Length: 303
Ligand code: NAP
Image (tube, rainbow, N blue to C red; front, side, top):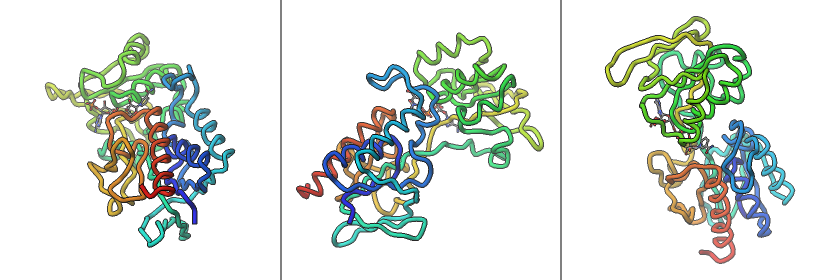
C-alpha cells in the first residue's frame, strides 16, 4: 500500500510530493493530462518569491524534476473515484486499474471556463483558443481578441500584442480585476484596444471565426469587431466532479480550511480546487506543503 496518493500533478500536487518524499513517505501522483497544471500556459512568472522571472513551462519542469529526483512516482492515469476501506483508501483509475493508500491529497486544480455561447465548441481550433501561449503564434500579424478582465486575460493581451498586429481586450466591466501593474502595461501598448463594458454575444464566421458580435452591458447597444482569433480567459472551474460524493464541496470547490483538511479524515485538498480567496502559484505550492505535512501527521500520529 502506498503511503500518500496525490491526485493531480500541478504546482500544488508536485509541491506536496516534494514534502511527502522528504519525510520518507512512498508517494504516487496520478495525472490525467500533462504535469504542471495551468502554470505551463503562463508565459512569464514574475511574482514567485526569489525568482525574478521564469516561464511557466520551466517552472513546472523544475518542480517535476525536483519531485521525481526525490523518488516520487508519476503515473499518467485519471483518478475516476476514491472509496474508503478499512485500512485506508482505494483509488479507481480510468485505465481500469486500482491503487490503495493510507492518505489522499486532492490537488485536482481547475480548467478553463467556457463562455457558454452558441458555436463555441464547434469553433475550437478554428479561431477560438483558451491558451495564448499555446496558440498565439498562429496569429502573427493578425487581429485577435482576448475576453476577460483578470490577470490571465490582461497577461494574454500583452503577450499577444507582441505577435498579433492588433489586440482587442474585451471585458464585461469598466474596472479590471487584474493587477494595476498589468492593466497599466496593457494600456501603454499602442496595438491593444480596450473594449468595455462588453460581453461577447455571438461568434461570427463560417467555417472559421472571423468576427464577434458584442453587447454593451450598460446601454444594450451592439457592435461587431472583425478578428481572426478569440482567446477566452474568463477564469476557471474546479475539476471536482468525480469527488462530489466523497468530500463536501462549496460552489464546486473542495471545502477545506488553511490546514487543507477536508470533512473526510485522511483526505486533504490543495491548490486551486480548494475553497480559498487567493489562487496564485505561491498559494498552490504553499497548500501542497501544508497538505503533505498534514497527511504525514495523519499517517504517523493519526491526527
Ligand atoms: P479570474 O481572476 O477569475 O478572472 C476572470 C475574469 O473573467 C473576470 O474579470 C471576470 O469578470 C471575467 N468573467 C468571468 N465569467 C465571465 C463570463 N461568463 N463572461 C465574460 N467575462 C467573464 O481568472 P484568471 O484571470 O484566470 O485568474 C485566476 C487566478 O489566477 C486569479 O487568482 C489570478 O490572480 C491568478 N493569476 C495570477 C497571475 C499572476 O499573478 N501573474 C496570472 C494569471 C492568473 P468580472 O471581473 O466582472 O468578475
